Amino acid sequence: MPHKRNLNPPSRILLVKGGELHLNIIERIKAKDESALRLLMDDYGDMLLRTACLLLKDRQSAEEAVQDTFVQAYAKMSQLQDPERLKAWLIRIVINRCRMRQRTWSWRNIFPSGGTALQPNDDASFTAGAEELFMVEWHNIRLTESMRNLDYIYRECLTLYYFHEMSIREISEQLNTPENTIKSRLARGRTLLKKILEKEGHFL
Image (cartoon, rainbow, N blue to C red; front, side, top):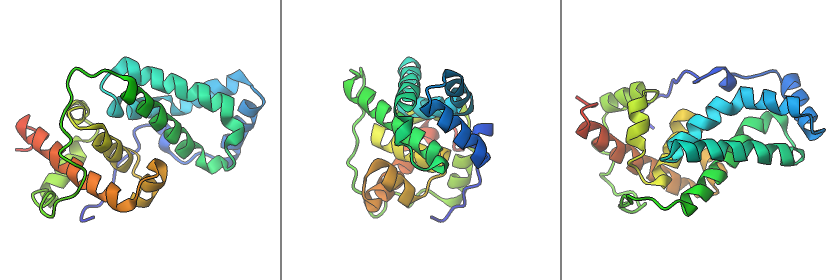
């Protein structure tokens, strides 16, 4: 990648927390301590909701996906073996919940995907300057709205790469998808999103 990501965490929950605190919350949830679940929701709720809102086109569906995520986390916390993987584990759950809602939701407008294969010149027009402006726009609500015009597979990859700052390998593991496919979706998604932003007057 020619660019360098340097995003600020969207909230305190993305900062590295003490291992003991994580372990304490996890162990308390395993013991079915509902007050610990509340702490987990306070720490990760905003991040998961932003993720779900980027993936789904309906805020109510996003909120329900996050609620489902915490219900599942509370019920299956014993399956988490490594406390340091708590955030990634929660992200995986919310992605799965969003995918389920994406499959069952009857959208009024279906946008053509244009295929997932990367064409040689698909990303050629995405210049360094455009990339920099893209990063500035990332935390802007206008970008969130523009993201909703993309097919789900592109929203998913862009959200994990830019919002969660995951590497290609990490996204591949999260989505159980080959790395080359992830690279293609990122390139295609950025190109499509750039065109949307240009049309809306955000790239001038």
